[in-house]
Figure 1 (cartoon, one colour):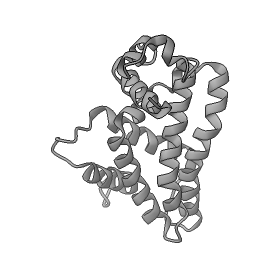
Figure 2 (tube, rainbow, N blue to C red):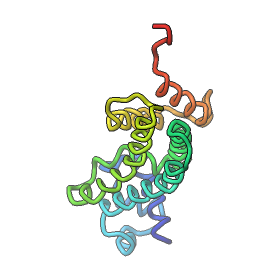
Figure 3 (cartoon, one colour):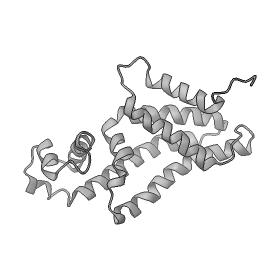
Length: 189
């Protein structure tokens, strides 16, 4: 039994029951350990939650940062970042669910430790939008609001997307990008 096995199981348990609904006993049972044995690997649910949030942000940063740092136009970067982000969320649904919905369960100390990692990830997106604004590719009054709006749309996708549904995650990414870039208004209005 490894710490990674425990974290994988905990992500699944937290997704199914929520952080507050899950117990250490539930996590122990998911990895066939006695509850007391689980404490040899982790000290608390808070420790597990913070480790899962760190893991999720590390995975996403590893996938998004190389795109954000490419020497291509900002709109092409953002389109690819959206595609990779949505694909990453859908391929790692347990971990993504914890990142998107359970971060509010962090205690104050853990929250303070988590926020800089979250902000670093969000900055990748803001920098690309700021670059697009500087290069006159994007027309945007507030890059921070744009990033939060885009992240909100993408993050909420996890609640309704089904791999066996009528659209692939790539199709959804393309539609989200087109909506974000073009808006809803017809061009002749």
